[in-house]
Amino acid sequence: MTETWLWPIFGFFFVTAFVLDLFVFQRKAHDIPVKEALKLVGFWVIIATVFATLLFFIEGPERGLLFVTAYLTEYSLSIDNLFVFMVLFTYFAVPREAQRKVLLWGILGAVLFRGIFIFGGIGLLSRFHFLVYILGAFLVYTAIKLVTQKEKEVEPDKNPAVKLVRRFLPVSPKYDGARFFTRIDGVRFATPLIIALVAIETSDIFFATDSVPAVLGITLDPLIVYSSNIFAILGLQALFFALAGIFYLFRYLSTGICIVLAFVGTKMLLSYWYEIPTLVSLGVILTLLTGSVLLSIIFPKKAEAEKQAGTHL
View 1 (tube, rainbow, N blue to C red):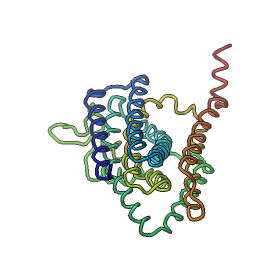
View 2: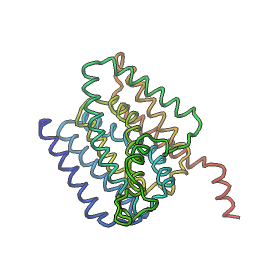
View 3: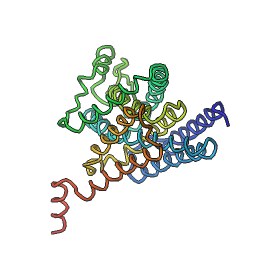
View 4: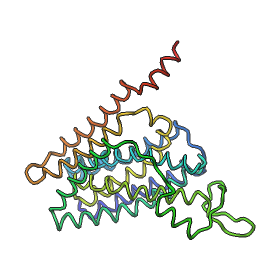
């Protein structure tokens, strides 16, 4: 099967799964419980697995493994970004039943912007190969900076895009359900929900400066890079609600993700002398993510451990 046919297959998977999620699984705005969110996470993982299996049998094991490696890399980086989304929702006091709508529109925007970044990046790296080493160094530097820096407070009001919206749109002081716009005394106002959406969207664009180069460090195959990004992003909404209450328990997960970032950057820096096999890359990424979760469970935060010990007294 040629590349020409693979794109329509990906498009079919994307549209079908998205329509099912939007109009069947979540047709009504509601507070999504953890159990329902976990089922949705499973749904998106199954969709990505089926697509990977098709690539494996149609295009060969190498291409199938490249997709899985790229998907896991993007998914792991997305997990770290969920913390910022939680902070933004808390800061703007977004009602739980409206959070899904904000994430939905944020994901649609990410589908567009990721496409621009990915195809632009592939074009540049294909023409100017030396950029691979610059991106590799950037990823290693970013990983080191994230590990060593102190926890930084998210300040949405300082976001330039949020400032711009407030300057040109009258914003109502309170929410109107899950609506982006409302009318007060006959005058049309934007609700705080649209401010939260702008903050989420611009945050995702910022996150893409790490995640897109990381996936480009694995492969420059346009289909694999874009499809792995999109499938990971589409599962992000469900993952948010599944992890919202337990994310803080995985104290070493952020460190594990930073090491994944550093590994991909190192892979790019070494590409001229040695090309790390796809299976090895996949094994390293899986080991790092699994190890960071297990360490978090074995060595929980002291406060949490003391709290759990107190409940058994």
